[in-house]
Image 1 (cartoon, one colour):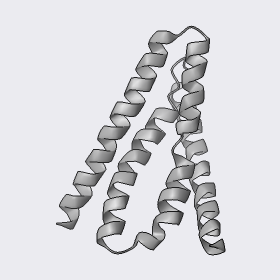
Image 2 (tube, one colour; image 1 turned 135 degrees about the horizontal axis):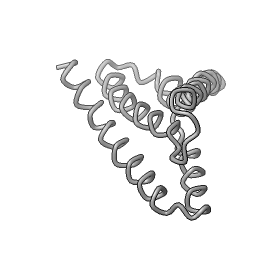
Image 3 (spheres, rainbow, N blue to C red; image 1 turned 90 degrees about the vertical axis):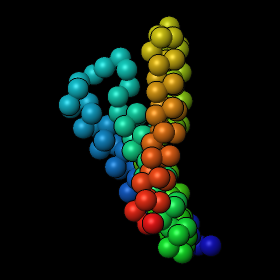
Length: 126
């Protein structure tokens, strides 16, 4: 159990740093925007990778890597808690249009990305 906790903690640190650096990169590339651009690519990419990862680990009998890779790295990388906060900030400032677009795009495209990751990995492993 302690080893699993260490795996999750180490993976979470790696994922959190990757999320932070993605946000910094988006800010540098696009500047300050009213629409929170840093969180969406992280959620979409993280969902896509999660889709492929769960298929790959399951089919290859490598589920012992779930704690480090899925819970740790991807759990630290994806930002649905940040997503909720950013959604609330848009709502709280009266930007209902941006809030609705943000929620719809984040959820729908992330789900589609996960499905894409599943299908891609199944095709690769077939």
